[in-house]
Amino acid sequence: MREPAALQAALALVTRPAQARTASLQPLPSGMTFLLEVAVGDQDALTEARQLTGRGDDVLRQAAGFFIEQGLLSHSTDSYRILGARSEYPHAALRRHMVLLMKWLH
Image 1 (cartoon, helix red, strand yellow):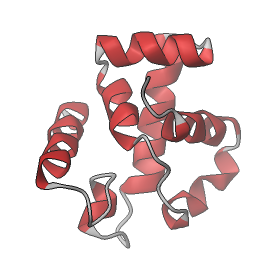
Image 2 (cartoon, rainbow, N blue to C red):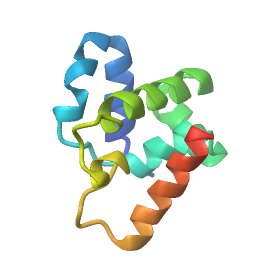
Image 3 (cartoon, helix red, strand yellow):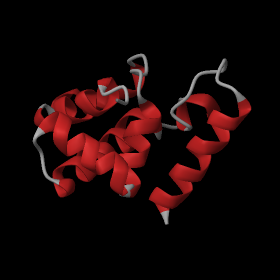
């Protein structure tokens, strides 16, 4: 089972959008790879996310996208944050996040 903390944070943010303005200031939750996989529509990730949350694919993908927009893509964040990562992440994880973000953006 994948770590659901980031997905849960994304779902919480959608239900309380007023907190979006401070989302980029909060520490990144664990499970960012899972969140990014949900955002791009990875079928395995979506299946697991549906099982964990009971939510539909559209809701999950929208919540993940909203979290990415509000929590990662701020002009004041560093490159690691934009990737949904921390500086201690291995190169392979950073690259995986970059690929997932590129898929999400295109």
